[in-house]
Image 1 (spheres, rainbow, N blue to C red):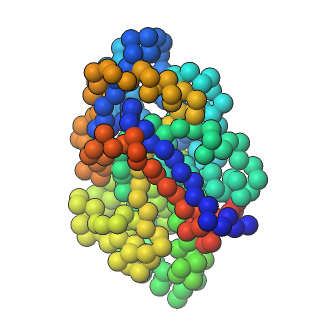
Image 2 (image 1 turned 45 degrees about the horizontal axis):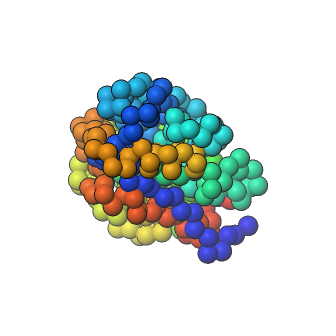
Length: 322
């Protein structure tokens, strides 16, 4: 099934709680602890970013901010919990570039428990973290182009892992198979941490996720970086080419993490912020590392839109769980 000329749009607001942004609150809000739901297991990039944000929010707002991990179904389980939470502004979702992708896949499969367009409102992009294709060091290919050549010439029974059906790596993997004319078997996991463990153990040949998940292992040589999907090379890994440089421009994709709330509470957040002196809710870059950076102009975040064109991916990517 193909969706023609369809775009999923996630609005990202000026009253951001994220890294490098500013926010102000009315004295009556918050009056109790808040909760950020992470739809992946602990240890991945989204989890790390959520805990950094929660700490700074708690310091600035005078209330505890709890982080709860609800992994599974490519992030859909946790997202659904937020969509069905009380519309009071006390439950937030920390998600990533996978969010609109899993929504596309589940909608096409006829089993989406929520509508990403109407059930959620974007609060802010918290950080941008490049997405990286990785491999076990035993894979005899130095980059993504050589991987394609290897699979075409030897017909190896390679598997690639993702953080779930319809996730960024699932979409990337299927698009790469079509572009390179190769075959690999998809193996879904509940999050980046278990995916990385299988890669390190050599039970999985290929994987991919945001760079901060695998940065230490790439530096140590226990994982191999094949390509970044970013539009330019990552400063800290200048020898790793982009997918465009390797002949796969259709795989270009920017990685991000952002905060969302159920659609209704957003107006309350705007009211709480209006006319008040803003508080810094940003965090320093050092914890997440040079592989991430915060949006530089928070005042423009109110007008910022993150658009995901399903036309680009549904023509070559997964339309349901495989």
